[in-house]
Amino acid sequence: MQDDFSGMEELYRDFILDHYRNPRNAGTLEGADATYEDNNPLCGDRIRMDLKLRDGVIEDIKFKGRGCAISQASASLLTEVVKGKTVAEAARIGKEDVLENLGIQISAARLKCALLGLKVLKEALSLAAPDL
Ligand code: ZN
Image (tube, rainbow, N blue to C red; front, side):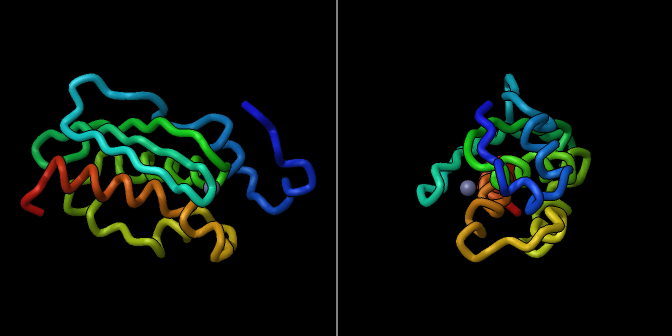
């Protein structure tokens, strides 16, 4: 993976870089109940999420993507947060929660990066559980 953090590294918390370099729940799910993919053309970020539900619970989730550290770390963090949660609980996760989880100041220009994962998750949830 390309490393383009020279001089910027101190702006990122270590765990963001860790999520970026070692994304949690990376990959795709065979037999997923819902798959959604979207991108952020401003930055070139792309994220795909696969969800597997059982009895209203997110039994498994995987994501695949490319783009900047904030977009990928945010998606990775989000998969950790929602795995094992009910669909209803996951649906209540808001932008503020995602930004709080990242724990760093996100500039207006990077908001779309930080929130792409949440957008993809919400779309995938509405595909998997359309009556929510
Ligand atoms: Zn980005």
